[in-house]
Structure formats: structure tokens, C-alpha cells
Amino acid sequence: MTSFMIKAHEGLPLPQSWNTVPDCPFCRIIRGETPAFRVYEDDKIIAILDIAPLRSGHTLVIPKIHIPRVSELPPEFAAAVGAGVTRVANAIAQALQNTALNIVCNQEYAQAVPHVHYHIIPAPKAGELSSDIVEKVDHVTGTLSEKEMLKKEFEYRHEMNDDEGQQLAERIRARL
Image (cartoon, rainbow, N blue to C red; front, side, top):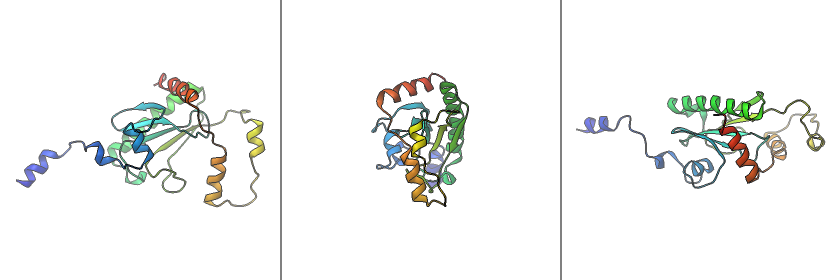
């Protein structure tokens, strides 16, 4: 009897509430409790603009299951994230007319939110660095600690305003 009941439930999707964590900012976005500039979404992933981008177009691709480490991501979600990263990266490259992208997934080290997510960050174009950014750059003569490296990265970020986010999300979505 028990094996019959178990068989009847095999392969059924888990309820969304079983896959999320109440305090996780990405889970709140997935549940629609926190606004975000949504670029792409399907049943397994969501892609949103980073609210504090390193550069314009900085996008996050996030599985709709709360898993802190990419090494623990179930295969079906890993496949969906991989396909999503490719699709969204192509749309970003077209929207910004820039094929130079940095794509990274941090696991624990430099991972600000403990929920798997990939960053797609457009590279600066030649001659694009503004003088105010160049003035901020300290020429490092030694090895930085993890805390110092994260602080330097944070200093280069800016918070995106609503108009900028909406327009950019629309430009990227139009290329999907």
C-alpha cells in the first residue's frame, strides 16, 4: 500500500512553498512579494536586473528553487539555468550591442545572497571608463583580503532608478 502511494506521487512538482525560504530576497521576488525588473521567466528560472549593477545590463539568472550552492542544484534546474543564461546573455548582447560579457556564479565566496544565481555582466567597451571611475581606482600593491575585495566591488556599484530599470528590461525582453 505504501509503495503504491509513493508511486502515485513520483514526478509530481513540489509545491512552491516547499522550495522557498521566507527571508531570502530572491525567493520573495520569485513569489511576487518584492518588485524586480523581470527580464525573463519560465517555470524553473527567473532573470532580473541587478538592483545595484556593476554596469548597465547586469542581470541575474536565478532558479526558482532555494538552493544555496550550485554544486547542489538538481539536474533539471541546472539545465534550465544553463539554457536561461545562454538565452538572456544573447538578448543582453543584442540590446546593448556588446558581445563582451562576464558570466559568473559564486558559491559561498563573494555570494551575497545564499541562493544560486548567475551574474551576466556586460564588459566595458574600449574607452568607456569615465574619469570619475578612473579617479576612484586605487592601484593595489599587495594582496587584498576577501572583505577588501568585496568593499572595492561595492564602491563601483550604483542603485538603478525605476525609469532606467524599466527601459533596460524592455530592451532586453524585446530581444528574447
